[in-house]
Amino acid sequence: MRARTCAAAVAAVVGLTLSATAWAQSAAERAVEAAKQYAGAEISIVWEAGLQSLDPLNFSGPKWEELTGIKVKVIEVPTAEMFTKILQEHRAGTGAYDALNVIPSWMADLAKAGALEELDAYVDKYGYRDELESIAPTYRDNQMKVDGKIYGFPDDGDLFVLYYRKDLFEDPENQAEFKAMHGYDLGPPQTWEQYAHIGQFITDKYAPEIYGAGQFRQPAYGIWMFEERYRVEGGRFFDPETMRAQINGDIGVKAFEGMRSDNAFMPPGVETWGFVEALSSFLAGEIAMTISWPPFGRWAAGYGTEEEALSWVPKSTIADKVGYALPPGGTPQLAAGFSLSVASGSKNKEAAYLFIQWLNSEETSLQRVQLPYALRDPFRESHFTNEEYLSRWADAGEYLATLRAGADTGLLDLSILQIDKYEEALRQSMTRLWAGEDARAILDDVAAQWDALTDRIGVDKQRAAYQDWAGKPNAYPM
Image (cartoon, rainbow, N blue to C red; front, side):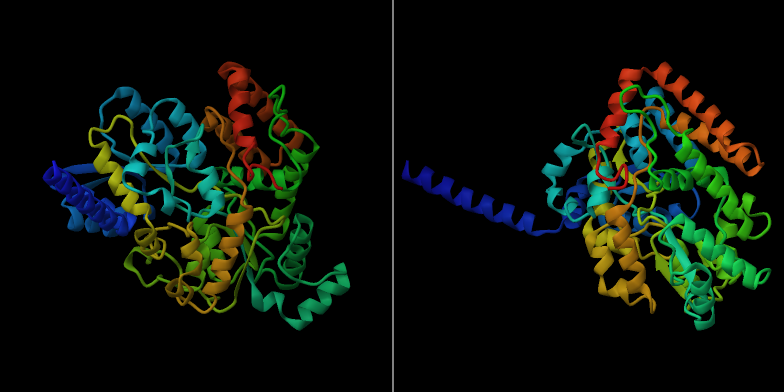
């Protein structure tokens, strides 16, 4: 009896020691060790086509195979097709996808459709819950769960940043002239009215060499610009009781007309601008302000642009002249971003889970957000304060501080059932806006389409989805 008791005690001590050793590992190390049992297997991951996919193709995929023996097959899909392809594959039941990149505004739809695997059990099994807490709250609290359950790991700190020419804003002559004209100091605009004042002032003084502003206007991007500006001005997308669309009210019309009137102080042809046109013009010093995602700030400073994958990025002529600020209103649109998920139909769920835990972990993600070519943006507290990142260029500290501020106040993309159809109606409206049609008539049409969609989906069902989204702290400005 005594021998059995002693043996049991020894076994318990050994077990506790082994457990303590295991939990002393980082989340990345635990994922690697557990994944080695699947050496020789292959998992697939859906990734946005283009620069984004260079992360798993050139860096994380090969590194994972080196560490675990698991091959990673990268399935590149254009962003506009990702939601549809994920849903179609789920319904077909082919098991072709293992891990997924999911835009957070799609998560509720995909989870309710059964396309995403619930991750809580894996998180607890592999001790990842504590590290999830160090993700910046706006991303952690809004881009991870549906109905209280984890379906994805926030993995990309997308948000809109205002970039401006410090040399023009800090020029004493410009400051004196602007204050005499408008009665306040020239600086990063706090309101959309100030944005227009500054943009027009610089265009009047410097055009055609330099215009006051320029930013992308293509419909795929324009809808996020509208969502942000509409809420900054006080708008609400739906009546929370009736679920009738409200975007065609006075606030929506003001936002639409303001977006169009701003084009007057931007370069000719700005209505057709996409990501590349805005980037090229800003880096060439042809515009004084632009609003875009974080990569603009890195590339404007010249960081990483010597990489072969970034050979298409024009050489920055303003590397030491760039200022960073939040857009007017101080509540930037988070504008897409990505969370890492596991496909519910995967035949390799555990291996897929371990891969995304490793990708998203503190130590691996810190390397990934510093890849110049991969477009993943800081999303963890440690990313904003990392000494290596802070030393990447002279103003990297100001850049990271601005991203951190935006991570506190950023506005969530609208997320309701069949959001892709609501967004398509809004995308089509952008083309009509730039063509000069009446703003209220355009938005009346969009509101009618939204109402018809809501009725078809079911008012009660959509109300529940909307109230869940609207109840989050970053759905509307606080």
